[in-house]
Length: 226
Ligand code: OGA
Ligand code: MN
Image 1: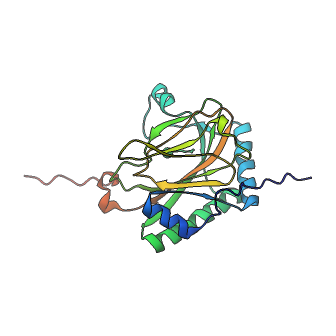
Image 2 (image 1 turned 45 degrees about the vertical axis):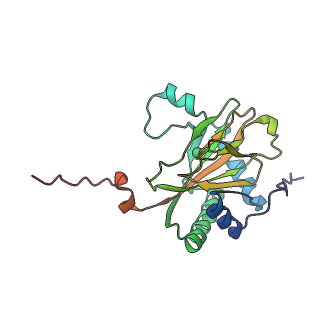
Image 3 (image 1 turned 180 degrees about the horizontal axis):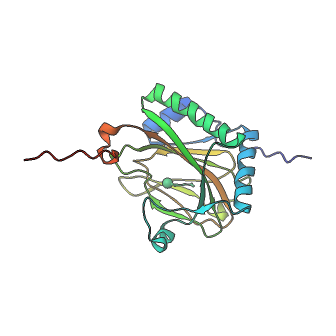
């Protein structure tokens, strides 16, 4: 007998119109992905990579102080390389999302990157932004959760904050199929300590706007001689 994992019906199924409304109105959205075959394949792959010790301790930007990093985040990650059908399935979904959002909201999304993440018991990620304001590098953050029957008492909640008044806006439970999307430069967020292994895929749609992100340009122009 195969185990049937059905996503809980409380959060409506993925709907691009609602996603666009949510993003323009409040900067974040919570949806449900209902393709159970894809979700199950992604969960199986994440679980296998974890069991086979194929994930690495996550870092922060270019930080090299590992103790400092451990105070800020404790998860293990593995970047997608598109090698498995499950990964390609999720990358295809992200690509269709990219095209729809560009068409409807003119976001200028250019590329997508994603990694599996596992928060082992005690894992957390302190409050942070995924992109510095004005960098216009990571535009849209998304997280797909892969944990059937997750209980709130296991912690591991994604807590979103209002940038202006520092209040928590909402807690997102990392239940199987739940898909959180938010603006990378505008929504501070944290992962509260998880008490059970917590599986997810974090992804970022980026723009390639060099004119607006001079700091990202690798070409160094010579300073004009005075
Ligand atoms: C991240 C992140 C949130 C989550 O990886 O940057 O904030 O719920 N993840 O896993
Ligand atoms: Mn983040």
